Amino acid sequence: MAEATWSVGKVAARAGVAVSALHFYEQKGLIRSWRNQGNQRRFKPDVLRRIAIIKAAQQVGISLEEVKQVFTALPDNRTPTTEDWAIMSAGWKALLDARITYLQRLSDHLTGCIGCGCLSMTKCPLYNPEDKLAGQGSGAVILNQSTQSAEDLL
Image (cartoon, rainbow, N blue to C red; front, side):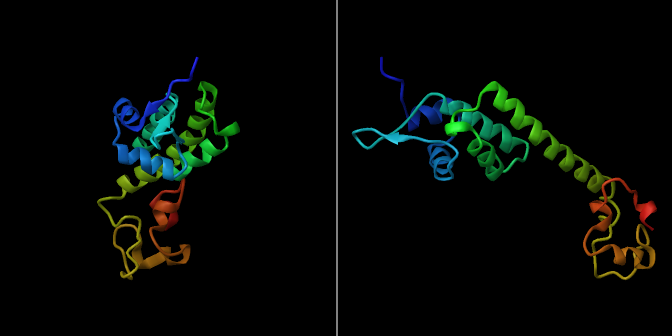
């Protein structure tokens, strides 16, 4: 019995993505196809799982390069299993937790001066009087601190 193969159009329709997205994913090494005798792209149906992972990762801010790294680590570049997903998602959870922490700090200081990263001011009346944070480095140094509050840094 021959293995099922799908056209690029069928995969795009089932996955809910544009054909151009599939070409892009393939160019980036995230999915694979082969050419039939008529030089048409063909995919195994399990490509849908890879596309679902790609789409889920993109929705939460995981880069395509990060997705490619975990796909590349799979033996024989196989389609991820349930166990593979558990490992991938655990790694991504740590990354997302760090991003959430950073975004929460950004949100907490949004109405102020965004963690004294303005560099052009010599004095910040809200978080950095007399530019005391200059010694901590350039940029939004308060936001780069993982556990300290702005008041602790001053």
